[in-house]
Image (cartoon, rainbow over all chains, first blue to last red):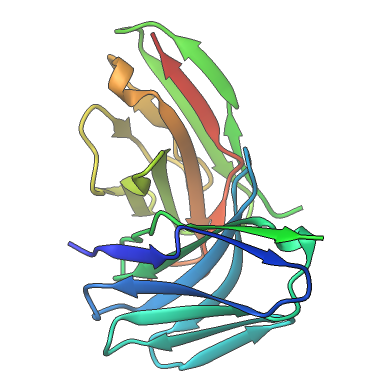
Length: 110
Length: 113
């Protein structure tokens, strides 16, 4: 069974700082990996989807990388803003099933 | 607007009283799935469906049933709810299995007394 770990569990940074969120998974036989953000009391919003054949995917200030063989993905957020405050979740997909980490809770301080 | 809707959003019920949480998507997606989210455990997949009349168990299917009679709907049924099913439930859909972005509903907060 796929085990997903996200480090750190919580992170607090001043506005404008660049930051990296980490995700590791135990089964490298994945189709893709998706990063989500979740705001308190709300559903999940997809941020980036990286296919297993890709190494990186970018959207605006977000960049996600994937090292499938070592079971790792990182989410890089440039020039953080208070509106980035949320919980960030990674989810590797083994085909039919998605497995989620417990997330990194990010607070960006103005 | 493309979306996944869930109803109800909040539900308080008592042990043993059957309930259904509805999920509907308007994107003609083939793949649909149910998750529960609990503090410290993250999201865990309950059931998923790859198409009409095709469903399969996720990691935590015990105590739940699903059906997929139409492409757009994927209801979650708790025939005899128990307090350990108190949780936040999410429905999600994607165009196909495997390689596509998942879209999530807003969640249903269920409390079983």
